Image (cartoon, rainbow, N blue to C red; front, side):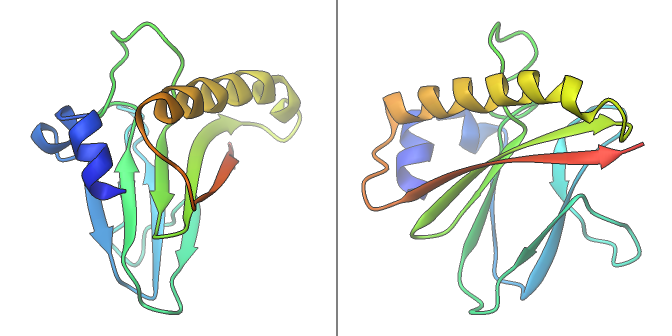
Length: 139
């Protein structure tokens, strides 16, 4: 899948949007100002999404919004994706209060749906389980 992504989206290489992790656990967070996702390097920083890799295999982290695509690209896109050799999970992160979570859900679904359709048009997901995940960061 890594090679497919790099071929279909050459900006992935230029912008360094794809990294591999083999750690037993790692967290994904989103910068407050830029809204770009990243892997938490500081053990005291809290992430939004924890990835558990008990088999210590290669887990790929792909930054989609603010790296593979930008705000100038006039379509909704999710924040990132995490995948291995059988599961590909698209992730959208939303900041909200507990009360207004439901009002953020339709936009998150649209962002995930548009991104998945775009990727399906360019990549072969045969043999992969596709997943979509909305992470609410409560403020």
